Image (tube, rainbow, N blue to C red; front, side, top):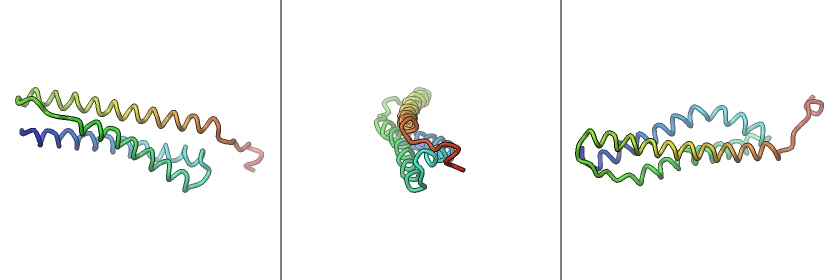
Length: 117
């Protein structure tokens, strides 16, 4: 396998995994953001922002991959190692989004159940 194919394989695997996880978490995140933001437009913005961050950071980390091995077995483990680094970047971005949402939830005005009725 040449170096370009191994680079593209690692990049596409990283982006596919990140997109799959974002697709899984999006409805749950959107509900929380809609509750916190109060309007559909604000929730859509923050959902889009979160999606870009959660896919973009692992993508940027994946772009730094430069294959150096020639043996297929070594190449497999090198790609797996790079994928774990990119997923660590995804988790870092997810934690950052979680911190921002948590801080926002703490300072957002709460509606009491009496006002809601």
